[in-house]
Image (tube, rainbow, N blue to C red; front, top):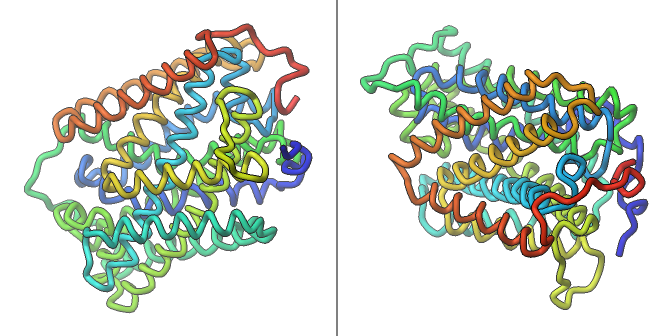
Length: 443
């Protein structure tokens, strides 16, 4: 088994590097995969849904920041849950939900990659979409297996290209329309408040990559200050980029056109705004952004699963495979992500991710409020506000999905019950005594 010292280096990530890591994970999945789906629920107000998502995420980030300031840890979210609930089934189940939501995000980005790459050939749907999605997941697996030391530098460069390229797309689209948001404001359909609130659930997925920073807490320089700063800077940068893109898409396409092209709305918006060259450049940008997103996600998920194994929160089987635990968790990650990419379309993958993430997020807020707010100096009203906002968004999203796709609600419920039941059997108790500080990761 690899020791923690082989994998983690304290102080190895600068503030700038942490911000680039957070934005690099967020931008790519969020904006390419979710713009059209957010517009489908929110209508002409869809740019505001990203602002609402940022507000909810900022309240949510408070719990993670306060806990990371007190206990900067390479265990990240698993550490937070164990500090609150002890090594019991609630902590294990919620940590596993987080890991699964990361795997779901991976399959979401992989499928988005396939959808955009096939756009120049006018291919929508069919077997090529899941086949290409699986191919890019396998590619990410092979790069990670190779142990390429330049992956960190590659991620920084990709983050810069993604942020710059996507921002330029939004500015160019708005410029060509005379900075008018006219197209998407004209619609014959009516949209309800419930739909707007539900769309915030998907917008939150576009920001949840900030948890990558939490999971690298012990490796960031001056973590007690910089974890929180990196999270808030990352969210702020993403808000600006997402709004540029949302208004850029809305200036080129009507709501009906955005919904029709919801899986590849940025490429569709680039054509009338920027011509065929702009369309091709957007497809290339989407391919680069999503492929690098899958690469980063595969590593992050396998690392979190390896950490959960090390903390004895999940069982582990080698299945006859040689090498360290993280090599095995890479295989598990890729198999699960590839299976999801084959079985579900983008809408269902995003919905499943939203359900898992919001429930996990609420468990963290309650745990910090109930068990740790005095230890970390957190304001109870902020923690309860974060909890209430998550609950409102989750309720609205559930109502909308029960009307439009009740099966995905069933899949999500069965999945969550199975996760917690499995952890209850494995760990034998719901809430265990708190872990002594000497044994907690990152201490």
